[in-house]
Amino acid sequence: MHDTAIEATTPTGSRPAARIGIGGPVGSGKTALIEALIPVLSARGIDLAVVTNDLVTKEDAERLRRSGLIDPARVSAVEAGACPHTVIREDPTLNMAAGDELEASFPGLELLIFESGGDNLASTFSLDLVDWWIFVIDVAGGDDIPRKKGPGVLRCDLLVINKTDLAPYVGVDLDAMLAEANSARGGRPIIATNARKGAGIAEVADAIQHAVLFTP
Image (cartoon, rainbow, N blue to C red; front, side, top):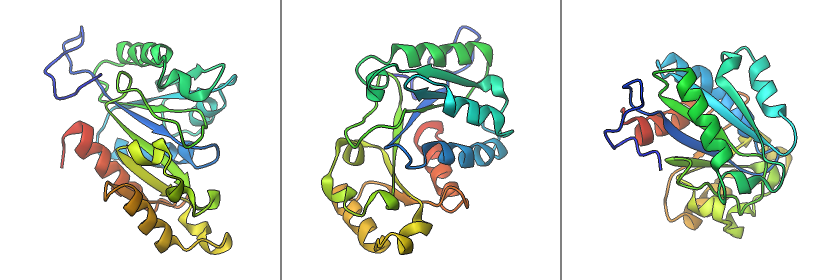
């Protein structure tokens, strides 16, 4: 585990980058969340890079590289080739190597974001890969997701419920969904977001900084 509390250093003498994961089902808004977080974290002076995961393409990486939000060289792509959670949980060596290469290329890197390929509610991250992780669900996926109590929803450090603006259009009572998620998680952190409009993004950035960068 890349524990940022340990006084370890890289060969260049700098502290290793904190590593966080962002997982969730296909279409929940993982890449949109990262796109919204990059300018917020960068404006706060945080030196970051991203590793994306897709099955047999580099689609998400190319989307980020084209976005103009981040130096394209700071985005690496891992092709899982099989079940998406394999390379973030059972055998995360491809992702670990991609992260190591980014750290070697950008001395002083403070934060590495690993985006999982779209997976189901059973997806979780290995703590050999990340220090802390977010699971993203969205209201359009159904207000019953919290009641299903999948490992992703229950075990993540932060649950993000995205696309809150769609609730009225898909028959979801957002307040009830948040209450059920809070009950399922026993009060552990939940943030409601609309990544496209920036709602809730500052709060997610605050949570990341507090959890792994140890800043207020």
